[in-house]
Length: 190
Ligand SMILES: [Zn+2]
Picture 1: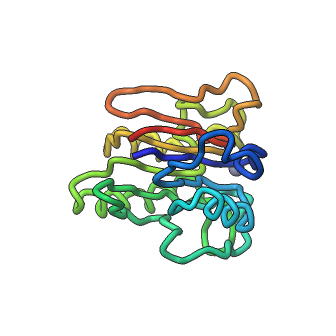
Picture 2 (picture 1 turned 90 degrees about the vertical axis):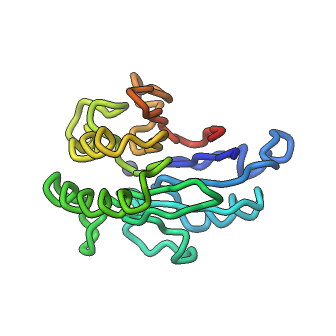
């Protein structure tokens, strides 16, 4: 399955030059946040592919997409691939604390266990120490790191730490999991 990952910044190629750049055979789009509803709508239409997403810290507004496309705190089955989504915003629009994230992840872990594991996990925030930054705003969540170690998905896709901030890597492999920063756009075969 050919999956297009998108996050954080809009891609001119996906908006205007997708035909010339062979984006016509994408099976699935996964967005990991900080992108507008309008942008997500256009990309879905341009590529004529289904999309699932989680929100980022800048997505406090209501994203006008179908409810079933938002997969925060769910583990869905898409054509035999199990995909779980990690959210970051509480009902008050604030970013979760480590403690809150830990509690939410514990529940998600149970849902994943019932399905016999997840193949893919998506999250706006990185797992601490895996493509995360040094400052508090970009250091990611320790709870996410623990969760990934415990659930061992094949893939963990995240955003938030723009690759142009420097020092961040697109791809990290640790144990059974491949961590990929979805910044702007990236295609992965899963
Ligand atoms: Zn962000």
